[in-house]
Length: 182
Image 1: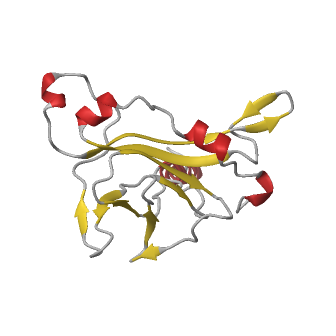
Image 2: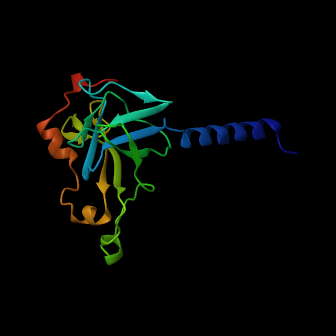
Image 3: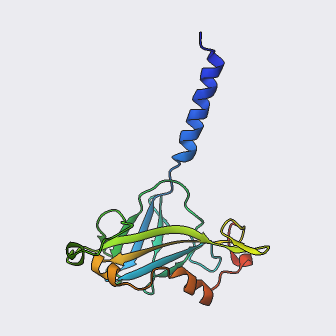
């Protein structure tokens, strides 16, 4: 006979595991200036960044014309499906950017001739802060960020700047004492 307490305990562990691994992130809407092609960088937790803005329960990320947004939003933990739109600055009209984000694009004739604009190479991460003699992305002062490329597959394949966050932070640091949520 199976011990009821053992079964209940295993059930509770399974439920906690599912809840932890499958936490839902807040919905996100990324508004990108109409016609923008290039890298987008979103620096999270910057006290001098744009204050949190919501629309119908979704986080709003208003990407400026230079493609770099500093925001006070903290990391959005969990699973989610962000939505991406081109925003016409004068009318406020939104145009959905196609498909789910794509991590890799092969250099093929088909990809170079694909006219559809999409979101490519999405990355979320942290750039470490000094911690003793090493740099650690787990340090309490690490800069959290999101980045991706907006454009056609041909534009992505012709893009030389793979990792724009490093040069941006060298010129525009986010000092540890100026970060929210620290």
